[in-house]
Amino acid sequence: MQRPFADSFESSSEDSRKGGRGGAVAGGIIPGELAPGGGTPAISETQLGSRRTIANITAKEWAFLAITGAGVLAGAAFAIYFLATNAADMNSDFTLALLLLMNAGFAAYYLLDGVFTERAYELLALVGTEIMLLVYLVANFVYMKGWESPVKIARLTTAGVLAPPSVALGIMIIYEYFSSGNFIFRKVGADASLQRLCRRLFATESVIKFDLQSTLSVVLLIVKSGAFSLAEELALGLGIGLSLLWNGFAIVAIRLENYSLTIILLITGLIQPAYMTFVVVANVDLLVDTNNTFIPANADFSNASPNVSLATSLFALVLRFGLLALMLLAMRNYGNGLRRKLVPPILRRLTRSEYESV
Image (cartoon, rainbow, N blue to C red; front, top):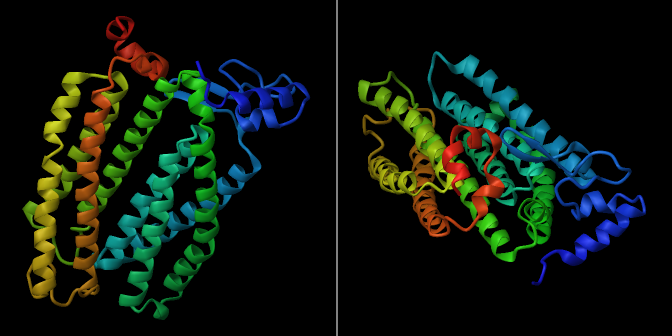
């Protein structure tokens, strides 16, 4: 059988025997094999699954972690400041701060999990999040006359300085992950079929997380000027709660290859597109009549707010249908032996009888 990555594996293993760093970086290390110098393994097992060890992270990846991490922390700090100073007004600055803080949390997760498990699709989501937030910041700066606020100038300047090198490094690392497939090779071995299924599974999991992020963004966009009605409070509470439950169970279902749960999720997953369609229709009406009571005529963000809600809702709608298609495709590949190699210890204990029957 032809072994993908075999050449890089053999060359990097030779580098490893010579004491060079190439063996640890290039990825020719199977589970249990030691890194150069006879020290730390390339992969460590945790209760939540396999992770690369710190010694296995390259200088380029450390630079990416440092620059992007600084941007995430700065974004969270600015978001907390605007939440504290605009809580009473509940204006568009408050809404944007909520979006920034929530997306900063997702960005931090994508950054750490993407690098330590070589998830190219999660780094793609991270890069997409950075670009999306930069667009939000520019729109807010223009429509809210941000040049009159030193804090907004500092926020946009920080994003403008840190985002470009972060995105550039991210794209380079994403390309390397797609090209090498080292982490996948270490997890499932040289079987090309299992490697292909593993890539598809990782892609589906990443889209599930990005789908949660986009859905929560749409839900948070209902936070506008004025007091909440009971319907808006229910939409906010149920929207967040149900999104967390659905997306969480979606990851568990495809990891455990559970047919019944996957089918239930495919059916109930159509609820979110119905809600997104409602939001899209509502915002189209707003673009025609800005005096609609859904957003007051004197709102700070003027027509930018329905524009942002409309774009975000349309994106979330398309993403959900793409996710349902990926989950359906993943379900067709259940039972091919991938679960035994990828189910983390915590899920093995929770479903021991089912897992051992595989």
